[in-house]
Length: 81
Image 1 (cartoon, helix red, strand yellow):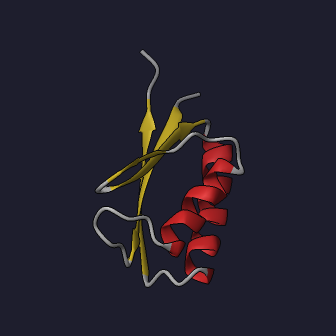
Image 2 (cartoon, helix red, strand yellow):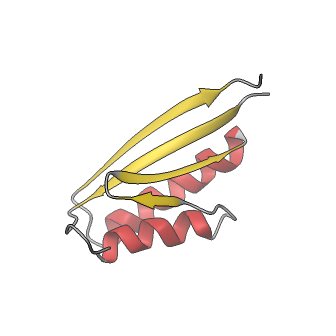
């Protein structure tokens, strides 16, 4: 089964600083066992489909509850080579 790569961007954001809504999103996916890659244009995780989708659901709730005004999510399937 191919894995998923998901990237999300949480707004509002302040350049050079992770605000409360971004931190809540990162904490939510970390609680699912992911080690997110955080950079200036978004945060990404990779894994099997079901755990990625579950982590994204919790991330959306956490980010919005922490004051996010927008969360953009992109998910792509990774085929095994």
